[in-house]
Length: 180
Length: 412
Image (tube, rainbow over all chains, first blue to last red; front, top):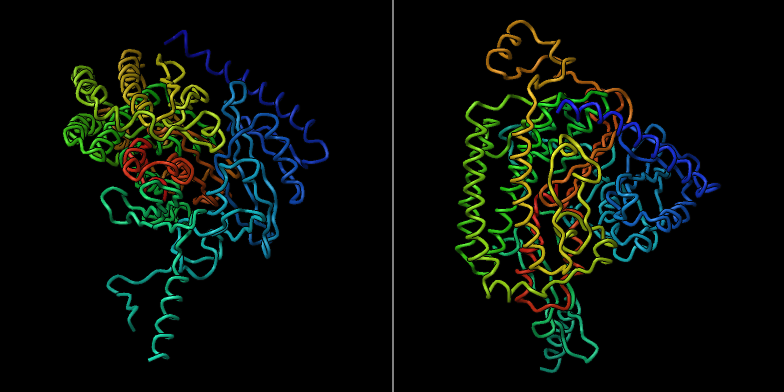
């Protein structure tokens, strides 16, 4: 035990350096496409921010570099700024890259959030895009099958993932009477 | 009379058109079957399948019957109250989920738990992994009509549920992991009891191989059924034992070690075939590896604190006394008003069914601004759409069981 403990911080240090190097290389590949490439050593991820019109381009480059599947695709709502941020966690199963994740971010207009679908590049995003649409109203242009996934088909109302959606509550003992 | 017959014709036309009756290229009609949502073979989900004869040509999983909006609920609660919440969806495999969520908070706060707490977390996570795999195998067995396997799976699982009970004080939902450490130390009799249970399980695994894995009927039902090729598994972003059974040796415990995994010795079982049998085999081999991990962790268990000194400093004298005498953490006020600094953190863990990802966006308030959580079953549900078509209807339960899919976990 005593011999193993000091190794951990060193290992992490080396990893942090490798992450920064990779971020530098990625920013070269994404020159002109990404507005921000930043290494987050705490979480071992690289944040990449792109303009809405450049999402597909950035995705193609990342996919050609070996990032082969989407781990999560979702939105983050910022009503004060009038923005919904598209946040895509992308990982890789190839040997050299498996330690690192990339988060592809893009700011979408909250009034009409539209983004190109990533299903052509990463088929793993198909169901996740369906969820992002039903929760945040992000329309994925070109998605083969944009239907509800988790909510009931007849669900109506605001997008439940957004901040202005209030969870309907009722007092204790109060009974819902749909027949009235 | 004439008018009447026209009306009937129109009605029947309308009825046929309003229903989705697909037609094959040969002009034959496909039959749509609805399996679930309350069918014992489907769990809490509906599987719509279109069959041509008994060959499935299309499959559409309809999930969301146990959707709990945990991501949204967490935005209205303090950080601590989300810990028991993330346990609920994957009731068989709770500790890895709490570890992932707490790791994300710890990354935000910039603290790391003491080594002993890391080892205790690892041991409980592996105990739940064994219990979760036994449950999955039991369910697969009953899907195939092998009731002995079902009863054995649930019977053997009881042992590990009992071990977790001794360590954490609860049978299923432990809420054992807290930011900066764990809730209590292990009892003195715990290592002996673990050793007894592990020895029993090792003996039992031999019986399992005899009665289940090397059983000709089971082999017939599972071999070369539901073959998932390596390329497809990567493309669809499959995770966990299902991925490793297709020849990709990806395991978060090795790829991005958390807790004590980088100090423990274990292997990652990988199979090449990618069929239902290989997926079951990989889960059995993982039970063996979990046994190794638990033994190794108990051997290397360091002594010392189980809670981060920064949090222990906030104990009042009574809490300090309780902690020193019984090694239990009474929650100081910091947990009620925990305010991680502004920022974002991502954590991932290898749960029993695969990789779970946690992302917290913090705005400096006592509640998370946004909490994103993807579970392994949620990422594997896409397999229903792409893996099942082309098989016979009778293969559906075999494939479903071999995927170890757990509907509440996918719905969150």
